[in-house]
Structure formats: C-alpha cells, structure tokens
Length: 434
Ligand code: DLL
Image (cartoon, rainbow, N blue to C red; front, side):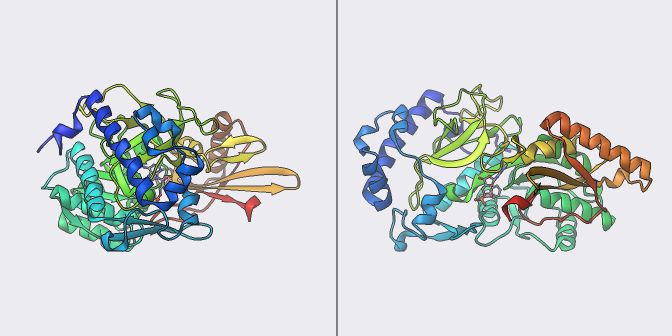
C-alpha cells in the first residue's frame, strides 16, 4: 500500500511549499479581482490592489471574507465563473435567512477528491477498503465529498447516506465494510442500535476505521467510540464553503494536515486579528489557493484551533492544526462565565457511568442565568437504585464545577429519552434566545 498519495507534493520541503503558496496567492488575487465583482469592490473599498500582494506576509493587507458575504451575495454573486463552467452546486441550510450556495467547476471537484485521497491514504486506506459513506448525500457536502474522495482513491464505496440504521448495520456486516464516514453522534447511535440488534461491531464486522467530523467532538468521545466499537477513530474536517470534508489526521494522529498547495491557513486572535503564536488557540482563517468557481480570500470560519509547527513523524510537510475545540460563536455565557459545549462533553465522557448522549439547557429565571445538563446512565453502569443515581448526579455536578467554575444542575433522564442524531447533533438549548 503506498504511504503517500502524491509524495512529491505531500513531502515537499517547507520552503518550496511556501514559494508555491506565494506564487498561487499572487495569481489568486489577480484572478478574483478580475473575475468577481464582489472581490473587486471589497479590495477597492480596502484600498488594496492585486499588485500589493507580493509575499505571503502581504496576505495581511487583504480584507476578510465572512459567511454573511455569501448570504448577502446569494446565490452566486461571489462566483468567478459563468454558469457554463459550473459542474455542481452544494448549499448549506442557514439557521436564519438564506442558505449559502457553493459552486464547483470540474477541477474544483477533482481537487476536493484529491485532497481526500491524500487524507485517506495517510491513514492506510487503499483499494482493498470498503468505505461506507453514512454522511447525508444531497446538498450537504459530507456524503458526496467522501464518496468522490474514496472513488478517486480506488476504494469501494457503499453509499448508504444517513438513516435507516438497522439496514446500514446489515450491509456493513454482509458486504464487509472496513471503514465508515459519518458524524460521531451518528456512529454512537449505530453502536447503540447494533447492541440492541445483538451485533458486535468489534466481532461481527470488519470495520476498522471511522472518519468522524462535521461537528465538534472531544478526545474523550473519541476514546469512548474506540473502546465501544474496537475501531480507530480519525478526525475529518472541512466546511461547505471550502468545498466540504477535506482534511484528516494521518496515522500518527497528531493533528489534522491542511494541504498547503490548495489552502493557506492562518490562526488569528478573534479580537485583534493578529496571528496567534503556534500552539495557541485562535480562529481559523483559510484562503483557497486553487478554487476556480468560488474562491475565498481570508475566510473567517470561526472554528477555534491551534497551529502545530513541528514536523509530523509521517513525513508530510504541510501545516497541521489541532482538533477543533469549538466555534467562537458556540460559546455560551452563563452568569458571566464562558462555557463551550466541548468542555462539557470532555467532562461527561470521562465519567464511565455517564451515557453517550447529553443535552445542555440554558435558561434565565428572574434575573439569573441557569444551566442544566441532562444525562443518561451508561448501559454498562445501569442501576435503578436511588442512591446510585444520586451519587452519579453529585459526581457529575462536581466534575463540571471544577472545570467550568460554575454550579450546574444535573438531571438524570431515562435511557433513550435524549435525542439521537443521524447527522449533526444539537447539544445546546438556549431558552434565553427563544
Ligand atoms: O460539515 C463538512 C464536513 C462534512 C466536514 C463531513 C467533515 C465531514 P458544514 O456543514 O459547512 O460542512 O459545517 C462546517 O462544521 O465550520 C465546524 O464548525 C464543523 N466541523 C466540521 N468538521 C468538524 C470537525 C461540513 N472534524 C462546520 N470537528 C465547521 C469539529 C467540525 N467541527
């Protein structure tokens, strides 16, 4: 099995990669200025001209692009190519207002698949693998993204999409699926359903690897998934605006590799916009270096992560980022204290008696904010003795208090009563916003 998909690109010396990025950035600013009325106007308003960009550092002269810009120019106002050059659209449903539409030329689709072929190869996938794609197919990028990446790699695709879980498990068993791609919350639901059906993923299937992403998930949840299913869980990251799922960890599992010939990464202080030192958390900002239809300049994703600069043991020289710890707009402020749902997940998944699903409910009672965490008991620890249940509630409340510095009410709810998810899960209900 090849170690690299494209060794020349993936292991190129860092200085050569930087030179390549510089060349691509210079071309890109001319391209968007000449082809996208949106970018021409944005550059003009900021008093920057394509000729001003000569080095990688000059990127800081360029204005940011926001998700709101995609909404404001709905549906195709940011595109750089006419419809005749487009091969596909995807769209993501906005929680408010218009969705955002992303367009792809044939080359954009091929680059997207290329990015995932490299990523899949980096964890040892190859032609003998069968990838069950249990991300939704359709306007969401998860299904078709993983599908094309896997086909380009030469693996066999089982395009189940999400849902119909019993059938998914039957096919997984009968066809010998070796790898799966879905949200971590959907895989938890699969584990639970398999248990109910008397199927052991570890013993009755050939599943060895899972590519989990499209929503935040913690190291602690990864450990649970691995312990309960016997597979290796890999982080897969991307956003629809950049194309879809694009990057994964390699077999070394020490950060997600971002292909530098295709994308330029910055990690910035969310308030000042200044670059964060390597290893410190900031907001991810990405510039697409190769997209034709819908390039993005300094796209502020709002995902929080750290840049890792020491070379990876796998030999790939491209930049790496750590697991996404949350989104800057996911933060809940409760009685003046900042809480990220990921922190809550980490605490809960570290307590073996706590089940795999939880819900955070924030409310305002009178002038005071309140936060409640609903949990189920883990099947393996199930007890209906009042004293066990009280002890668990106390244990969870004190573990949450020590991490969040906030008193949290813990409610133990009946097993199976919290929502299960086939796609992206919802972990917070903020009643203050209703
Ligand atoms: O979720 C693309 C994707 C599909 C990625 C399948 C991975 C696998 P969007 O619907 O536009 O695109 O949502 C993008 O999801 O900005 C993050 O906040 C979150 N996200 C995606 N992957 C991860 C991950 C797809 N591995 C938004 N860890 C992003 C944490 C993730 N958050």
